[in-house]
Each structure stands twice: as C-alpha cells, then as structure tokens.
Length: 380
Image (cartoon, one colour):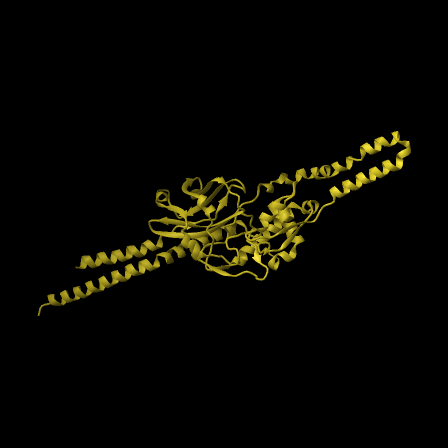
C-alpha cells in the first residue's frame, strides 16, 4: 500500500513537471519582397535538435481566428510551414509557391509538441521592390517625356522663310500648335472614389504614375493632398466613399524617398501602438490585422470600433527597422519567451487541474485505507 501511495505521489510530480517545459517562438523575419514568393522564418526557442521532429506547425483553426477577432482570408491557405535546422538553431520556415500580392500578412501560427500547444499572432509587412536605392535614378526621364510635344511647332518655323507673305498666318499656326501642346501637357485633376475594401496602398498602386515615384511616395502624396479623407490623420483609417484628389506626378516625385519611407514607418508604429497587442489582451481598431496605410476604409460617420483580441504576442514582430538597440532586442526576446511560457502553462492549466484533483482524491482514499489498516494491525 505504501508503494502505491509513493507511485501516485510521483505521478503527481511528473504531471506538474510537465507543465514547466514550454516552447517559445521568436520574431518573424522575411527575406522576400512584395510580388515575390514568400520566404520567411520564425525561430523556435527552447527546442533541442532531437526534439524538433516532434514539433508540428500549421495555420490556426478558423475558430481560433474568430476568437482572436482576426480575419482568415483564403490567401492564408497558401502558406507552407516546415520545421528546419540551421546554423543558428531550429526555426520554422514559412513559404509560398506563388508570389504574394498582399502588402501584409496577418495570421495565427499554431505550434504543437508532446508537452503542449502554443498559438501566436504574426503580422508581416512586405516592402515593395521599389525600396531599392536606385529608385531615384530614372527621375531624369520625366522632363524628356514632357518636353517631346514642344518639338511639334518646328515644321511651322522652317516654313516661315518660304512664305514671306503669310508670316502672320504662320505665327498664328505656331501659336495654335503651342496652345494645343499646352492643353495636352496641362495636368487634369484626377479623382478616385474610395470603395469598400479599398486600402491606401491599393489606391496608391492604382494611381501611381509611370516614372520614378515609389508606392510610399504616392501614399504620402495622397495622404497630404486629402487630409479630410482620413480619420484622426491616420493612414490606415481611410473613409469609405471619400473622393481623393490624385496629386500631379511632379508633386509625388518631389517628396524625398527617405521622407516617404519614414512617414509610412511612423504610421505603422502608431497603428501598432493603437492596436495594443503586447503579449496580453489588447484592443485593435477597425481593420484588425492590417498595417498602416493598408487598412480597409472606414465609414465617414464612425471612428471605428474596438475589438478585444486573444492574448497573443504582438510586439517586435515587424520586419521593419526598429530604433531599439541590441540590448533591447535581447531583453524583448527574453520577455517574449517568458510570456509565451506563461501562456502555454495557462493553456494546459485546466487539464492539469482536473488530473491533479483526481489524483489527490485517490491519494486521500489511499491514506485513509493505510490509516485504517495500520490501526487494525496494532496489538489490542
């Protein structure tokens, strides 16, 4: 009887020890750009090489997305997940066979291993290829294209010496030609009406002029030209039904590329702060899972609704450049691991409680029987 009691106590200790082991996930890193097949990776923390084969990774279930308040578009089904070993340790490789045309991906990653289960949200922003340093080089082509129509009056000028009596007519003809060129070259006011599911990034891609202007330059030009079309001066809160005035090509290209990139990045960071996803419960504005300048348009009569999302890790996930130093990044990884370990323990807590309570009841019964038998064994 004493042996059975010791066995049960050891079993309880084993169950509690199991809860201590927890797997962690690092920050997502992308090696691909927009309109390219996805190539990203997520480090697996606290996993040995011999344990990697037991880890299973997949997209979370539709129910998990619904509980977290995140959309689960069909495009996410194209994501492929595979656990791999590398020089820097174990990681999850995330790929697609086809080019990704969405400027961002927001998804829930589910990891299962023999000791538990972990679900974490990742938001990946894909930079357009136009971010390359050589983007500004073709800008010299714009004046040449615009100046071509001005060469049309040359035939009228060469004909003037032959028609000495019709100088006035030739001059008038030249004036009319110049007037026609002026009408062609004069920029017309272009407009774009925001429809449901439009994003500023998509609008910028649609109206982007042929030339050296990048998507970020076009977005910033639209943002500055139409301040009333955005709620609280937020790029990702575009009003549905707003009529946007499209700036001229020269106005778009006059914005420095570095300034445009910095402003878009600032809007992204502001959007992340407003979402409030920081390792616990948080709130996100209308358009959950969407980056700044890439959120669905909002109704002009509403400032958007707040939704509570599930406790997931959200800070430090962006591949965008951060101002934090190396020490801050290391500290952030440690905090991430601790939070995820805590989340994993909480996920297993209910099952463990039930098991422990059942074992405690059995121990109590065994102790009672031991006491009874011990009392009967005493000499009378």
